[in-house]
Amino acid sequence: MKLLDGKATAAAIREELKQAVDQRKKEGKKIPHLVAILVGNDGGSLTYVNAKVKACEEIGFESTLIHYDEDISEQELLNKILELNEDDNIDGFIVQLPLPKHIDELKITLAINPLKDVDGFHPENLGKMMLNLPGFLPATPAGILELMKRNGIETEGKDCVVIGRSNIVGMPLSVMLSRNTPTGNCTVTLTHSRTKKLKEKVLNADIVIAAIGKPGFVTADMVKEGAIVIDVGTTRVPDSSKKRGWALKGDVDFENVAPKCAYITPVPGGVGPMTIASLMINTLRSMELRRK
Ligand code: GUN
Image (cartoon, rainbow, N blue to C red; front, top):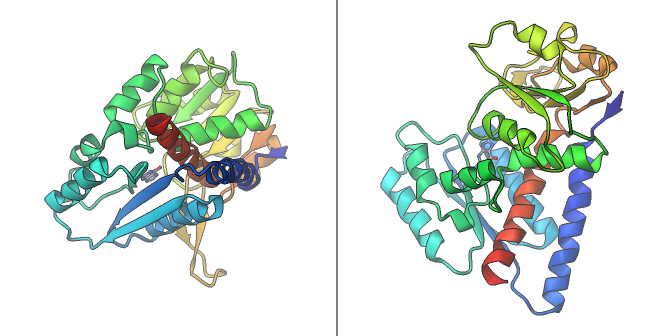
């Protein structure tokens, strides 16, 4: 069994990006500027957004965190998005999800200028992804493909089962793995809450991607010997042995599944850092595309 070390792979990507930024600085060119908008005080979202800002600092990007109270109106948030769309100093921005119930996530996503949509959530970018046209790819799926690529895992011809069909992970990932690209060409089965004989399907998979947010859902009896297992889950579960009182748990029963795998991602330190690295790649690209 080999650990797919997202932390180390993401650090290597950040180093490459830092060199690109240093080069731009030397040439007197603009430095990418990412804005992250956070609404409310969800602990997980706060951690992720802070990690995104920290990654910007490490690479040398400019970054701004805009933190609104939970009760901000939808209109006020839309106004900020329109302002960021127009601001030439801002190369890309994200609105951390989920949003409070009184704010329509689709309306917010649709308001973002697709050319600054470094999360790749706008329908225009998702449509381009479907057609294999250049655009922004969603950060978590892109990070997973990059993690496999940089660790020498070929996807071509493999049977892949994706568990979970969310708009930001499972659904786009199933498309990206299916496409005729060097990190695609899989035969993909996208499974969800209505899937019959799930265990049978997962047992057949060369690559299993678990993205449903149910801790320990994928058990050893569901995984074939030699499979590649990617765990997207990051649920906070109570853990009295930790000072903060909780631990992050993936969707895979790591302890029992790992011995059967050719490769497996840990939680934390697997997919999470790769999501942030992809966002950084998209931000640099956003600036280069708009400024040449
Ligand atoms: N919530 C969970 N993952 C993501 C992500 O990649 N981007 C944003 N904006 N929100 C998220």
